Length: 427
Ligand code: UD1
Ligand code: CA
Image (cartoon, rainbow, N blue to C red; front, side, top):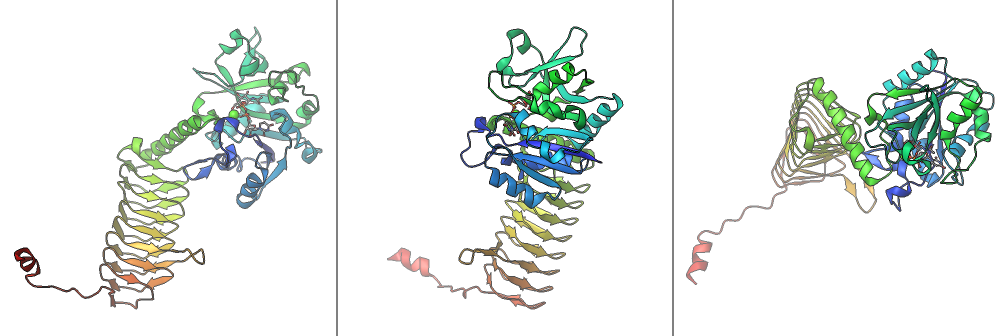
């Protein structure tokens, strides 16, 4: 679609009280807030402008490294949400199509909702549409103020609102769809006569009304989707909402999640039918899990993990950036990192892939071919390969290729001193 997106991500996020991380780079299950927003809008727009300012370098790097159709635009100093959008004007000088504006701190919005929002805008011949919703507790959001005939009048921020306006429960989601050609002039005409002395994006509503434009609100039923993150407490609430939403979808598609309350599964994790996820499992980042697997209890998948069908990843097993082929078991207390495990592999309890060399600071791969059996409490020092069908005896440290069907052991010989304890006890 020939729509442009503008994503506001320049603010400091003062209320997050973070010294090291800009608000939009805080994470939910291994993915940044900004990442969620761009992912949800990237399929319905052909270009995304991301406004950066606070910690601009980091946010810019994140966008560049991950999104080819996104372009960052610097806003410095940050004089408000309206000022942020005005930074894009030189980029869109000759553009007359639709622009979707979103906030980088609102990660729960769904692509399908944005699609409906744009459809609503088009079918109403709207020039400017704002998304709103009803919150029981509207504190801190901008309030949607309507005229006596129920048409939109303006948006009033919490800090500028009268007692009467504060009682309004319809709030501004911070998401807008506009005909750029008709609304762009607003951005050079916004004023800062408000409690925060900022250029408010919200003022485009009253500006549009004054210009006799067709201005509408799209009221969203599921208010969770526009939940904005301003504090650590909001971050925790949003994480819970997102997690529950995804787990409900997985269960609807035939995945058993024994206890959704204690289980965390990132949105970017696909899981096949009849797989069972046991309690206290934490799955972050992008992962694919096959059918009829058993994961957990207390398993940790850290992203980049591909698990094929009928695999067991048991309790206190951590897996990162690895492929585990079908019918393989990693039952207990193991770390599998940067590894490729073949089919029908068995990993004994307490097996570690030592993937990191702290001197060269590099990570290396462990390859275990089909039918390999690793005895308990073994260390596989990467880079290392154990070839087809080979066994490793319990307690071994493996530092070189083990040829197929061999047994490898690095155990020191067992000494048995007959009657040693009895003799000691007599003395
Ligand atoms: C804003 C809206 C409010 C709405 C709420 C929805 C305004 C004035 N208020 O309030 O009506 O209910 O979002 O979540 O728009 N940003 C910039 N540059 C700036 C200032 C902010 O890029 O100069 C970015 C921030 O990084 C953030 C977004 O804009 O991603 C929103 O800013 P924030 O300060 O969180 O606004 P709210 O107070 O939540
Ligand atoms: Ca906000």
